[in-house]
Image (tube, rainbow, N blue to C red; front, top):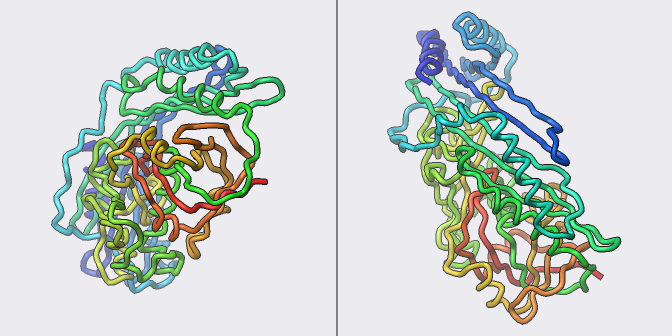
Length: 449
């Protein structure tokens, strides 16, 4: 990692400061493995390594960008030259400019497991095979394991700018994922399980396989329900999906472009006093945790909704300048091949005190939503309209009853926030940028027969 930062600093030092030029270098190196097994055999196995430099040059309100897939000074110099050339073709933007140190000190986070580099490939394959075996043995109604997958990534990166930023970080992450089909007669249902961690040794094969079996078999016999209005109890994964949508609507960039239903609503009451939403990349339990953002600024805990009240939005440097404010350390990017933008890394609700079972009991009558579909087409971030396909289990007398499918659940994001009735204690960090927990929302529309 020191070598990456040294290269970034060398590129940034080439800025023609006298002419007002600003230069940023983003240098990254990563290794990843992806394995899929099927029917006791390896179906796919790949191991890849990537490394490169992305260079941004800002001059007279115009930005040029270029990247190169190599880690040496000659290649980096070529990227700098190309980025400088690209400035001439860029549109003028009065808000263009690189980040500057803001005095926020980075938090020390232990996100790197060096032992992962030595973990044998065969042992990784064995994990995927063992999950597949356990799912098959988990219930006689399991007819097929569609896939059992293992993946991991080890990533190191550094950012340096001619404006005084010099930061570096690294992290590891591993996943197990399995997708199963259960059947009775002509009825078949699918379910998936997963386990995540910083190293392969963190992965829970038992929990991963049991989750897939339960989710697939629980839905057997599902029928289309009658249309009604009821309380929806969202599974942790569904809540994480909802929070991901909510975080995007709270991007300062989306707000400035008029693409958010929460524009100009800071200070308004959006929900009950129990509702607190944060984006906290400094939480080491979050899979998206990082000590710095994609522009090299220290990440920080940002309260978006506190006690039901909208507190503010997420910003990178550019979006902050457009809004006349400062960055919240919320720049993200897809690697050295891309420029930064605004994004959440670790969104979660402040947990409540009840377990999922206790919430279901307290609701009494309603719908437990196990999964949703059609989120990208069924949710409008400007109007707040929310209508998605769903499957789950009806709640009767405070317990799970018959499974249901071929239905939609609908409301608006505004109404859903206002009608949050219970927030679970079962917070779980999931793959992606959001944590899940059980969430009960009153007065949802169920569209069935």
